[in-house]
Structure formats: C-alpha cells, structure tokens
Image (tube, rainbow, N blue to C red; front, side, top):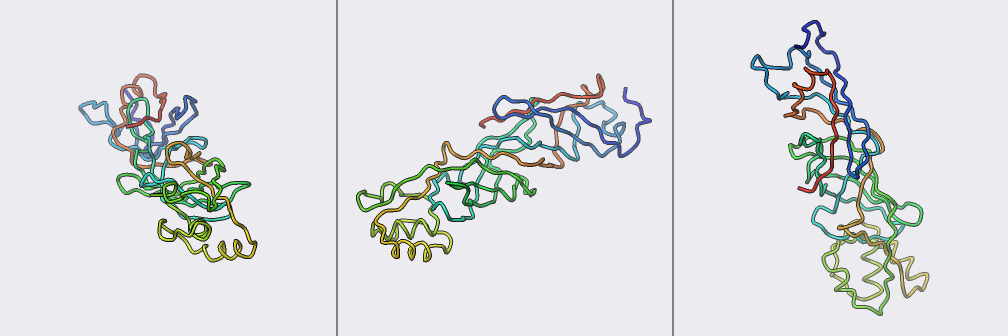
Length: 248
C-alpha cells in the first residue's frame, strides 16, 4: 500500500518510452495530486487525471494536408498550411498521447535547396491547444513547368501557393485551375517575365509519403485520462511505458 506520508504536490517521475519507428526514448510523466489521494477507496486501477506528460524531443509525427491534397510551392515561397496527424501516438497500455486527426498549424519555409514545414501550434481532439516546436525534413522533389505538358491533370485538386500558381498559369496559360493562397504571385510573375524564362521549377509535397514532423523540444500535454498505472505503482512505484505510433 502506498504510504500516506508522501507530500501533496510531489511529482511522481516515471520512465516511459515513445516510438513511431521502433526507437524507444525516455518520456516523463508528472502528477500534481498527492499520491495517496490519487486512488479511490475501491482501489480502482485507473487514475482519472495526469497533470503533465512530456513527449520528448525527437518524437516523430506522421502528418498530411488536412484535405489530403498535395502541396505545390516555389522554392523561395512561404506558405501557411494546416496539417493533421495521420497516425495516433499511443502508450503500450493503449493510452492516446497524440490522437489521429490532431490539427497542426504552421508554414512551409524556404530551406537550403527545398522547403521545410515548421509547426507552430497543435490542437487536440478535445480542443486543447499547445505550442508545437517541430519541423519536417527538407523537401526538394521538383516538377519542371513548361508549355509541353497538360498541367491540368497534374495539378488538379492540389493546394498551390500564390507564387507557384502564378508561375504555372503564366507558363501554360491555364488560369483558374488552382486554389491560390498567399500574395506572392505578382513578384514571381515579374521575375519570370523579366528573366525571359520559358520554364520554371516548383516543389511538390506528396501527402502520402513526404510529411513526417520531428519534435525539436518536449511537448507538454495535460489532463490525459484513463492511465492504468495504480497496480504498477503499488508494486514498484515506477512504471515503464512503451508508447507506439499506430494507424487507427
């Protein structure tokens, strides 16, 4: 039985594991209530509320554009985009740490010879919002735009940045086939015309394979419920989790 002499407000440190690719890394679970007061008189095996779970830096999240569209931008373009997680991150006990369908706000930014998504906020299914310090790898898959192809079929249904849409429209004379975002189009078109170019390159982000975000710092998640830890705590006062990322 847990000793009632444990002080109210003490942090209970547990060693957890988190992985989306089979690599186990440490995770910290902190609880604010007094340990002796965590459990009901009926000795329930479920703790109702955990104050803070720290999902560690290095954790990966599989994401895609919220409507499943591919994204097309120029290499020097910045574009605000909303992504969603395509896999949930769970503990080995089945507790959802980051649910499938969590909304991630951020933007694609120029990076070296490509583009990189830099996350800013994550919104969980219960509406909880947290700052998110995460980014994708540098993406550099390109398509050359010229008048020699039927671009309507290639770009149909894509999410296209303002600069990319202007370049493509100017080169192939197919205005109106894109969903245009941003106001970078005029500058891109001016550069194209002044340079006398007959083709240009755009970066294509494929939703089914390209987007994985890596946390650059710990993500603190609060008020996760249904963590079944009482029996383990009673036995050893510590717990080992092996959270995994799963497709729902």
